[in-house]
Length: 117
Image (cartoon, rainbow, N blue to C red; front, side, top):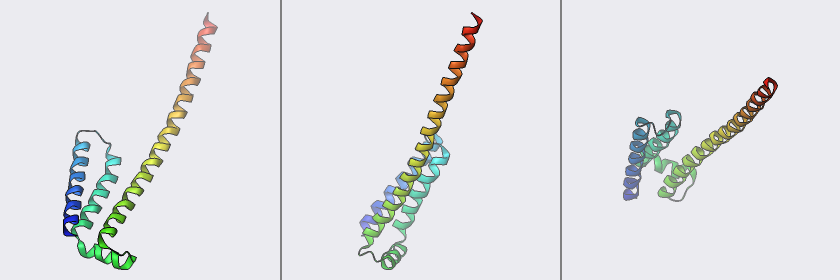
């Protein structure tokens, strides 16, 4: 169990470092990095506080502490993926609306050009 917690700690710290470097180099927008930073910090806290992990295991009725860690990690990342799916859906809708506006503007520009000839 301790080895698993150590591996989770290292992976969480690596994720934190990667996100911070990506923000610094402008590879990821700050508003999206907050979600990643929250997830990495949550995993880091859980991997370093075994009593909290065991408390959640006992009270949630989960049979094993490592399973609690993975269920928690999976839940955090499922929430993140859902959030990013919503963002992507909004961007797609905005992209369609923008393409329609460009098409309308092109139509108006062409119709104005036809009247001048």
